Image (cartoon, rainbow, N blue to C red):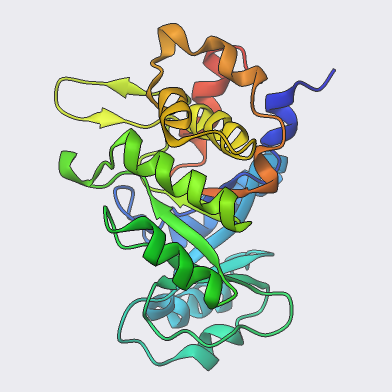
Length: 255
């Protein structure tokens, strides 16, 4: 019988294998994606994410025999001007860029995501995302401890998105189900995040949402039953390893 969590996991994980810390070579990333979308947990796998600067490399690998991903998200950066090239990618489902990058509205049903300034003012940024008719993108980790946002900041993003009716995606550092406060750096958990989004959708205050994000695994086992409705706001989670979150869920008997 499906559980609230199993229903919520459908196409949750965008495949960011080209990005740090994995940084797979293009051919290896494409092969790993093909294994994921044809494997036993294929229903959990979202689009293959590719930097705009590496689209020609992707095309070259496909021409050499690699399987082209059926759905692709293109990640652009500030200063890029090749929007039409990005918008013409076969199988394109979403385009991501920093807030303020001047991204035109994508064609058709292609989704636009604008990344919030890391640790920056929340309300001003979310107002700009809403004015652009886009979705929000929030970074939950990075290569250094300082890159991990506080539970209060992340909670304010979730509450702000709920108040504005904004969908969002999260990325970076969300490889494990539950929050951990390690000796070197804290780590957000994606089950915590799903439950916190569900709470934010009830118009709960920031403090209540932050409390859900802050629960460590020993106290967070019940969160897997509190994720219902989260995907109406949280569109996806970008991860450089599809295998790691699936293995972590399996080890805890959540799949």
